[in-house]
Length: 160
Image (tube, rainbow, N blue to C red; front, top):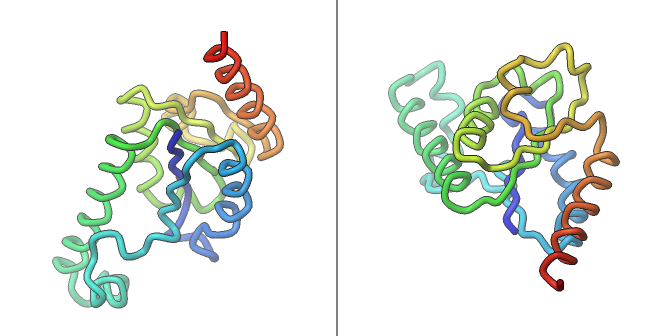
């Protein structure tokens, strides 16, 4: 199983690394492979693009857009062609960006399960995002219980 970790990067103070670092060992223990876009800054970018693209947003919009399009293409290809499900973390920063929304919309459209963990009240999450979610959890403990039961049940089905 391949899982994609979806959530704020651009506007998150830690670029979304903390929650991803905390959930990854659990997912690996389930025997699943994890793609963490917050750790893969290189993707298909040149060294110069990785280093400078954020400052191009103000100084060279066309170059910035071209670089961001490479990131969009890479991440959406990964979701569309490789992942079996998405774990998404929705916090105060996720709503400021747009990548997570696009990723969840693509997953919904392609029938890829989305397990959404909310750090904000569900009433504050866009209906569009909630519509893309397969399951919504109030915390990571609830997600872990669900995934443990789901994949244990799947393993039992394979044995029978």
